[in-house]
Image (cartoon, rainbow, N blue to C red; front, side, top):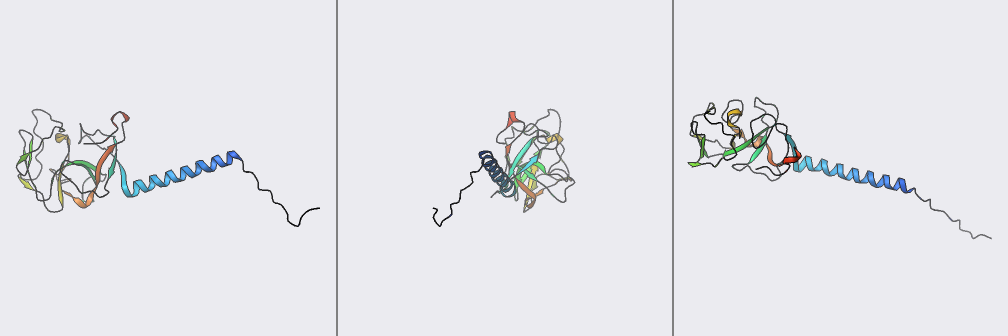
Length: 191
């Protein structure tokens, strides 16, 4: 005799199916994390050209962040100006900010900001060559809202000295270079 209640048997799920569901869940979470990271916190940039040698070499992949970022002197930044001759993002070093005065001695490769000579051990110095003075007259005072940026490979850099780029509007700064991803032998922070 059976009771008035019918018993239901709970089907047992295949362990393989459960593993697949776990992996799909992990992949979806990881993909969501990467999308949020590169949308709101950081972005990728690739070095294009020789202007930042020896610090950065063409083809290196960089992580750039603008989260709470305010440009400072000596920062390596990425910017993209709609008025620039160059249509791709550009990597340069901040030499001076708005209100500061830049002076350059093109014979000795000496760069001064507000009368103080910069320690530029990162510059790719080519002895005997005078790098391009560009179109500006020095000493040059950086206008409000602008940055004076230069490449570390001074003789092979279009930067704030040139008409193609000129002083960089702070609004077009995509962020500070914080990490080098490639090549693996040089992975780490960028200074």
